[in-house]
Image (tube, rainbow, N blue to C red; front, side):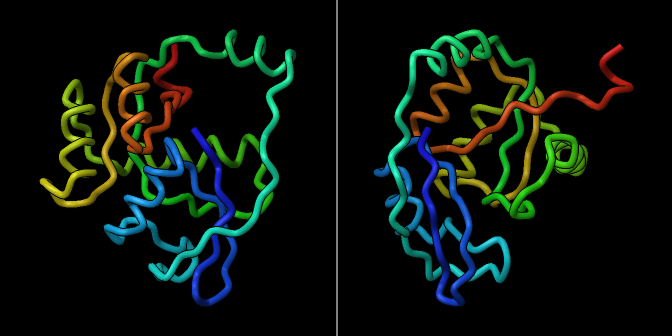
Length: 153
């Protein structure tokens, strides 16, 4: 997963998360990358500093790589510049609640949307850790989302 600094023709700056630089280029060419502020598709990459993984980050990320019971496919991020973790979780849960629940068909349906075989829409459902990894490798943005608090207990 890479995070790119992007900018639209209206000079709105935002981040985009992609499976690879190639995935970004492919999605950009297909008009799938848009500005979260104005929805413009005239997007360009901005220079950014490379991420250097430290030993501490490597051990932390391995511990956090537990299987995810559910995931949601979402369009380009549209969050405020510096949200708190609580605000982000609230926004993600809200997005997931409003998404179409495709259940176990999440990987299949996400691919159909990504490759233009189905209409673009926000979906949610269940996927294994391996399936999520495969989707990300294909450049399909999926994000594990915890269920609302009332569904955790």
